Image (cartoon, rainbow, N blue to C red; front, side):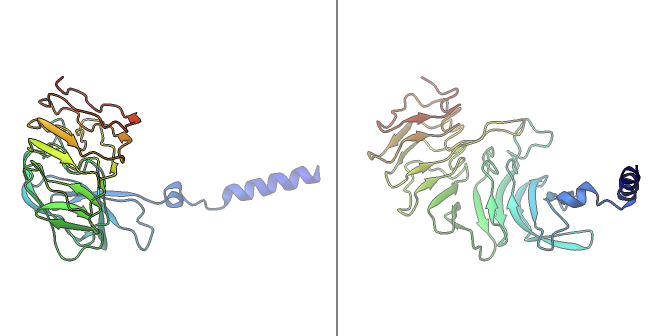
Length: 259
């Protein structure tokens, strides 16, 4: 009986102790809009918290700021979210309004599909020195140019000459580009998945390249996998010869490709 009484007292005391809110335990996320951009800070309780820019309502030549102030605190802008550029199915589409994007020196990561639905983008620029990305002739690469991240859709990549350092193409490398033909050289050894989801649009390595009539893989033994949404909606491509080494084809690879 005494043990039961003690247990009840302890239980009551535990109930009276202050409990840290779940939001504080897991990290409090803030979403806010300022100067035409929407930002997300995933955990404002962290001293090194940074901001992700998720979308914009601006048009023309836009400049993403390196820092953003919210509630008296400054956050470095380090990430660009998927669907930063929104398609025609969005409530506030930007796929035909943003023509140039300048990235800040603080950017560390860019999610697949950030720019892939754009139909008017002419160039990517970087303001200052960035440790993670570089731009050459308006085309975005990772810092050491081993990955081609994104070629703006209005830069005609017909018969594009890939830098010899490039070994990988992102999941929206040439999405909606106006190119007519291209050869993927054998020094490129990895092709990444695109995205196919939701109302904000899809993107793939050559997604929506409506002028594309010829795609060739240079002979080599590096290709074993063709990723998702690779050629989806490239509606005028009359034929496509798979490399003999291919072992796996992903979903929506050739959706709505002429055959």
